[in-house]
Amino acid sequence: MYEEFYHFQTSPFSRDIPTENLFDFPEMTEVVSRMQYVCEKQLFAVLTGDCGTGKTTALRKLNDLLDPRCYRMMYVSDSRLTPREFYRILLEQLGIVAPWNSAKAKGMLHEKLSVMKAVDGIKAVCVVDEAHLLSFAMLEEIRFLLNMKFDSLSPIALILAGQPELWERRLSLKKCEAIYQRIDVQSVLNHFDREKTGAYIRHQLSYAGTEAEIFTERSIDKIFEFSKGIARTINKVCTSSLLYGSQNRLRLIDDHALDMVIEGEFA
Image (cartoon, rainbow, N blue to C red; front, top):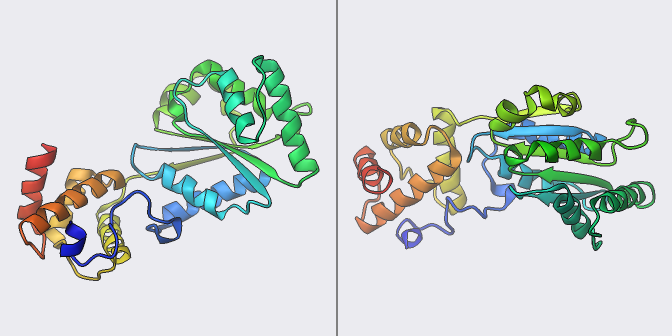
């Protein structure tokens, strides 16, 4: 609809943009680089950031950068995760039917990871998303997963990704001190500032096939003020603005148009 009106080749603010075309900025590059190091050295990392700041984007970029001949990434995202379900999900992603008993499943997983690393030369990477929702029992189980061969060797690179509550209401508490001490790398993704918000919008429009300044500087000010620099919210506001603009035949979306969109759809 609006793609045709603005002569886009594709939707500029969609969620399925190939990772090589994603907006690149220093903080994201640094986070992905640190996560690559974690995978290489088989370390334990925690990645936090508010909802919509790009944690999943960073993990997508990481996954595409890892050589599948050398790494096997397993992804877990389940707010009701239990130890048994955790091992079942990991084993199934490795092509193994998990036994009902969680202790046996844990043993099978350790054995499989050891064979992968020693025989096949493949390093395992486990990403647990939405980790701020994990129970304390599940966090303890993850700590046990890191222990192998008398605590001298981790069988897996582990990345916990979640909202800031992961630190504030979980890992910073006394009862989580044992797992806190095991963390090797901590990374945080923050909101965009005004400059990055404008650069992000222009990059997305360029990806869609236009160099036209569709959003005025004042309208970008409004987008930044409303979104607080959260990429997911920027996407929503820009998409709604482009729909509004195409319906009203606006080649240039100014701050007045933004007011109409925000008041009409987001108030």
